[in-house]
Image 1 (cartoon, rainbow, N blue to C red):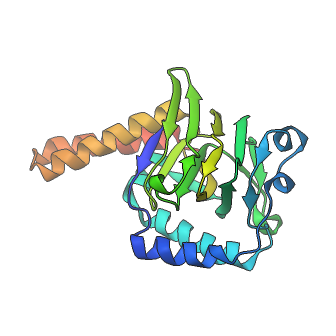
Image 2 (tube, rainbow, N blue to C red; image 1 turned 90 degrees about the vertical axis):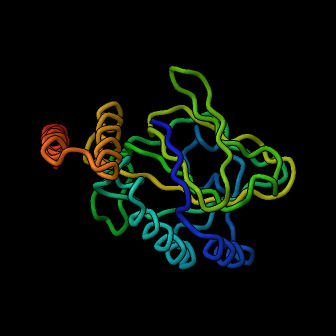
Length: 226
């Protein structure tokens, strides 16, 4: 499921974050991946141990956690702290699939990457190229969103970032382990949740809404993993 999550950060938050990142000490993004990823990755990232990454990442994680659409679509069980990247001067990231399992900070176990998320911090008109390309059974999908908006998609997807030929593309990214491992099941639950919300707003029959809500929670109970 490829889903646009609008207005995760407001303009003031984006501008403050960008101003802070202007003076950041960026590192070669190849330092964060294995040999296969390093062959196709040309960007910069905030170092893992950066206090700035932890501070801004906490702000992004909190904003996503408050966003009802992110919660309904991802059903997050655990979320890795967000990271930040920077593309310019031809920087790109070739086709790759995200690692299936990643270590949680502080040696607190591991996380299965079910959902990937990219939060855009640069406006589309500020740079050329830089589109996120996600490939699935239906073809290649090109994503370039307003600053403050995010995209979520299955971590199993083949994806890449087009070369940035003008300007700078700033973004945050993270991975989540969902309560529901299967992407198709998450999609059905989101569609059901959305229908219940719209019917509630339209003043639909209370008994019918109660029954639909029961179906939603019983499916979640059946499909969720502790």
